[in-house]
Image (cartoon, rainbow, N blue to C red; front, side, top):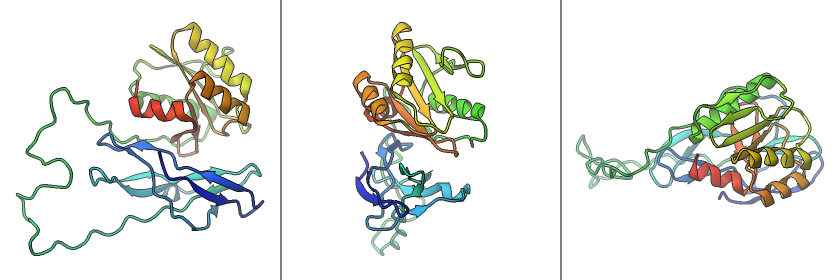
Length: 247
């Protein structure tokens, strides 16, 4: 779980408690961008691809990679970019430090192989930019495939059932509208999953209202919020658990 920090909206002065989303590193370790405590959030008025990413270093394996820039949507309609601590520059090697081609990298020594029963580390998720409602469904399908679900099928546009994606043991709904998903949306998805003996997963671009979040927690339905970069972020505990365990 990431560090919880207070964030005040510069537009309406509303106070929020923000926890950055947690993603698995390539080594499998859960990792959240380290927030810069005390720094003022920046109001997002224009998105660029570069601004959507930050460099984060894994404290377990030392790997540096690009991760989604943490964002917070305020109830007043403003979207805030939350500052992240920059990755410190590595210290110069000391005279006594091993160097050269025989030196072992940080983390697991290269001469010790992974045990044959070890689960291969999940690769870095490569998102898809969302420009249309159909893009949102495709981006969610890519993310579910990254989590380990196979044979994912997309339903026709705006299916009457509300189920946009299906796979063995999975039903998923993708809400690309500008309104937060509500209680009824979550309950209908859960009922579809119950009848199919499948995991129910919800993706929304506008988030969820309080009743929907509470009901999803009670029903163990993973909720994800998607931004326009196509990167889903977990919005409740079941979603965090799904990221950790995979399909």
